[in-house]
Amino acid sequence: MEIAIIGASGYTGGELMRLLIGHPSADVVTATSRKLDGTPVTSVHPHLRGLTDLVFQNIGAGDIDADFAFLAVPHTAAMSIAGTLVERGIRTVDLSADYRLARDVYEKTYGVCHENYFEAPYGLPELHRDAVRGASFVANPGCFPTGATLAAAPLAKFAHTIIYDAKTGVTGAGTNPSATTHYPNVGDNFSAYKWTGHRHLAEMKQEAARLGSTARCYFTPHLLPVNRGILTTAHILLNEPMEQGEVEALYREFYEDEFFVRYQKPTLAAVRGTNFCDVAVESEGDRIVAVSAIDNLVKGASGQAIQNMNLMCGFAEDAGLRFAGMLP
Image 1 (spheres, rainbow, N blue to C red):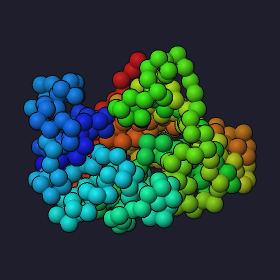
Image 2 (image 1 turned 180 degrees about the vertical axis):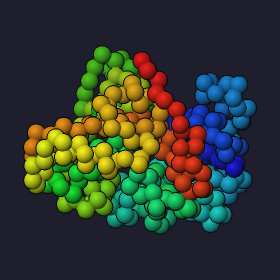
Image 3 (image 1 turned 60 degrees about the horizontal axis):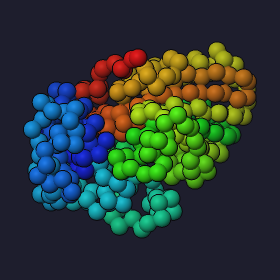
């Protein structure tokens, strides 16, 4: 199957190419970039040298010649491209935020008018596999909501309050440098940001509600001096107390058939470079602490996008994604 990556010069574009090189049924034939037209892909992604001879192209959605496309462009940019891809019958996974939320929620959260809205399945396969399977367009979840929702999902409907506290590596901010992500400001440092107003909270609330929860949800992210990974601690305040054995059994049963969710002590090192989410829980009665770990660029972005592609196209769900982490 021929693949186009639209917006291929960033971290997620590079990860899509890295992962798809090992996919048995996919061949990346187009990598677009407005600024790097005519430049070899390996000039930006040197880790792919010897594995691809692609050159960036500055072409529009109407000129894409592929069976499948990944939209790896910023929010508000995807909405101007998505409709054309759908009309041309090119199955697509959108890694931006443009189709993750209901229209009114999106416009309130992102402060823009959505110019080309249509409903799309929310591509968290562990919760929405049936909606994703066979779909023509899927909205890939945000990295924070992926780790947070998988941490809390088995208990969401039993909670009255969920407080998410997440630590992330700096690649989540993208390739464009800023004062926040400049290495001297990040290295040997640790800080919270967007304490109460991070946009990904809207996705967390949406998914909790879809799980039958009426819980109030809160979220504060922190920036770690590491490249990759998100460690999320979910403080789940229950309506009725549960003991450790009961909670642990609930999580093990909920994720029993999920290859990419492992019940074990979460660490960033164990999931680095993989599509796995590691999760574990501890009870103190009416408060459950659930911790998850994901790689923000893989299960939090490009890997999950490929997992969705596999479901959409009828491939094995773990195709191109079955490999271990990079310890130590």
